[in-house]
Length: 432
Image 1 (cartoon, rainbow, N blue to C red):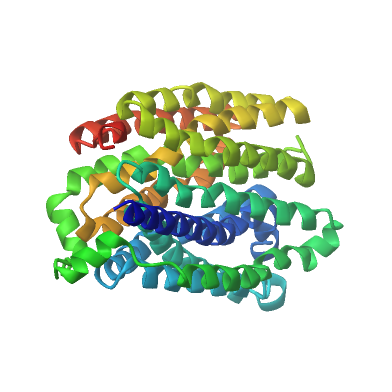
Image 2: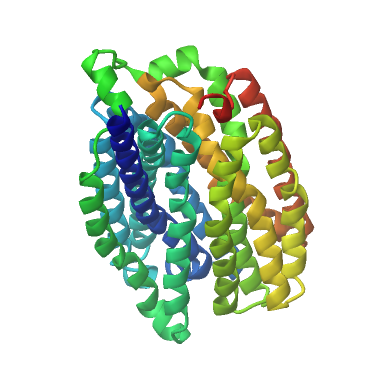
């Protein structure tokens, strides 16, 4: 018995580490695009417009990837719930890596005209399909390998891939942004995308070595696999999906407020240089890497509903504070503001994956949490930089973007508490 527990723990750790590394690579690819959209894609692919409108157009292509994510969630979720989590995750990683690498080789508008933005949109769509299937599978694989009473903690391994991938993408762009503008716009921006090819090879080697989840093996052995997971999700779990979408909002938008919209705003308004603001962003992402795991620990040890509430309330004040401190043009104050705004949603993000896993049964879990998360991303995350930029363009004041951010936090808080109550999600401390 003791040997079985030890083996289960070993497999759980291996699955958690593999999910972390795999999602780090996938998020690197996705965040590399968001950083490029803020810095160079508008100039290179939409040069015929004024700078503000060009950035808006680049953010629109950024949103395109989010439109594809629910489709990817349904398609890869179906495969993951029927043939297994592991095989599906290998496919998503390979697809994402190939697309990201190809973006680095794209011709720009000056070379081929309208063909350039069309190719960019196509590759962004495929990126979205791959990302749509990645997150849910990585979270489910980690959580289903977890020892009893530790699924929220192990699901958070996959969650760490987001800040790690974001950090890696930001640091790579920070390095190349030090090039003179002419070289950065000519070839420097391409290298972060090409770097993805190396990362994918590493990720595939690690991901192939992981075992299938015990829960998936069990339902396959019992021939209890859902015939059409998406139909079952919408037939039996519509309310949980809707609440889950609301409960996910700030976790998918806060990053884009900081690393995409705020980056474009600060650089275009000449509050900071490109390199300075990427340095500010890097500090915030490092803070997220450090504090995020504690969210899963807290959610595992204390009352889930109260813990989630106290994680989210501070964000109502911290996001507006962040924008205010960025406006001071002080590097230390801007770093403090962004770091403070990062803590609440990071803690909550770590707990969210395990909460969603617990809300759905094994037979439809991959599909259900993928659809929940990716529909939210499509509606809210992809649109956030574009809407915030539109509000800024129309009002001429950052206060409109602040109000937009506050509204998202409040909706998330209400839906998160409602989800825990409605889905009867148990406290992990009571399961041990």
